[in-house]
Length: 156
Image (tube, rainbow, N blue to C red):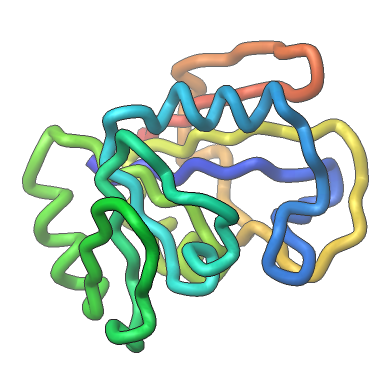
């Protein structure tokens, strides 16, 4: 099962200079809870911009530059998106895609679910989440948090 997890501002921004342009502890805690003891995948640039290891998660990085992946903790490197898709579509185990924009764009057609945290403010940034047709999904879950709204979309 392939899941895309993303936090998106009101103006569709997801990043600025390789980082999130906001700091919302409640949303970061929500991310931690949803990904705890799970399999997560991200691109090399996203991995390099994470300030610390992601403990208690199986971390996978998609890159063309395998030798450049360095950090503590468990990291498995993939160099071929087709290998990931074949592996994770054939199982009920979750693979949570955590960015960046190009990785989201590549995996969007294969995502079984989208976990979206909507940040209700506009931010300046240089990275956007790819457009997706909400008519292709039904809402499985909705939570109104203090500083964001969470929606879980399931592919119809």
